[in-house]
Length: 236
Ligand SMILES: Nc1ncnc2c1ncn2[C@@H]1O[C@H](COP(=O)(O)OP(=O)(O)OP(=O)(O)O)[C@@H](O)[C@H]1O
Image 1: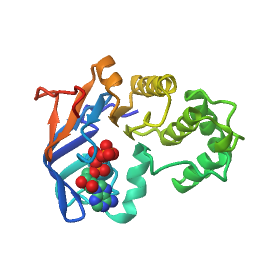
Image 2: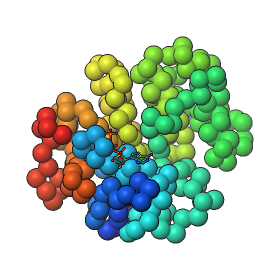
Image 3: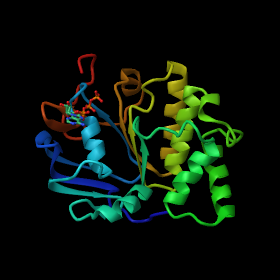
Image 4: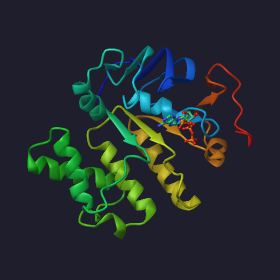
């Protein structure tokens, strides 16, 4: 557990690029430890591009980003796996291997992130599966699980290394409303235990129901509900 009061994420005067094209300019915001923040905006407005920049999938070419103790202006390719140990990622592009059991999926990530002791691996695996309410799923194949259960495994996987922040891109996107609600509540529980969450969503219901801070991508800028009047009516 980190007892400092530094923000877990600080973005200063950054430009977010896709190739040569700037998607968002003058991006300035920080996320404090324990904060839950929604990221909204129309399709194509730059939410995924911003999140991808934060976990160093897109290069930071301009401005400064400090996240989970890493400075992305200075980060070297070989350091990126260490960064990703401290950031939990729940993204459409980070799906489960369909030909491996849940335990094998988790084991793969643990091995890739430096876990060696098999009893510790087993214990941590059991812990994260319990946390997401799937204590009996270790030996199941992904196709034996519902969409919501698979998403819970993805979340369990993101939690393996006790990240200080979770980045989630539309984590409830393809789920029935009831199942989506359960997944959202799981994010809230994780947040209450101390992990910051930055979640991109198009789900108006969530925004209306939960008055968390909102960052909105609009016209190439990032608006912050802390300092702007951010609308999230049906028009975005
Ligand atoms: N791989 C890519 N190569 C080039 N341009 C891209 C790529 N991915 C996205 N873009 C462009 O970058 C801009 C921002 O897209 P991005 O995916 O970040 O938006 P988004 O807000 O996440 O959208 P959505 O809500 O549909 O997921 C768009 O103009 C998009 O066409």
